[in-house]
Length: 171
Image 1: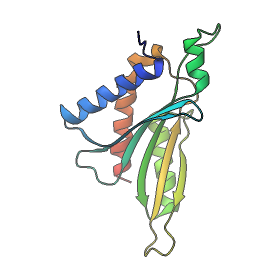
Image 2: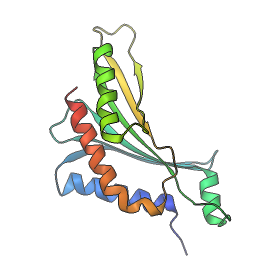
Image 3: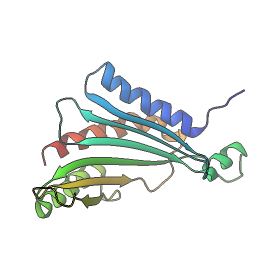
């Protein structure tokens, strides 16, 4: 009989709540979903991307990752292990004034998530394109494993995620 892993349980919880925000509440619009199994590394990755309803500047993404070690610790019930998975949050947006907007983005996200979760911003541009527009990928990486013990924290996590997307829309 199939026994869902920690990754599966957290994925389903995140997915259900975000789809409820889309289908029932109309708060956001799901724009993309991936559920990948990397057979070379025996790892899993789940991503769900969305835009806020009425939002046009920011695409938000929830990324859940599980390595072969995470999975083996759980299946083999490795003593001393606490099976879990990794969580990343990403925001994608176009910016024009790097010197002004990047510090503003960092202030907004640090104000919401606290000083322990430092946003990483990666800027890119298309060579030869007109204008001075940069594509900004902002990533928040949680420094600890997410386990089933944090399942009850998912509604608060999503509340902060939505607040982050809303405030980034104004940058």
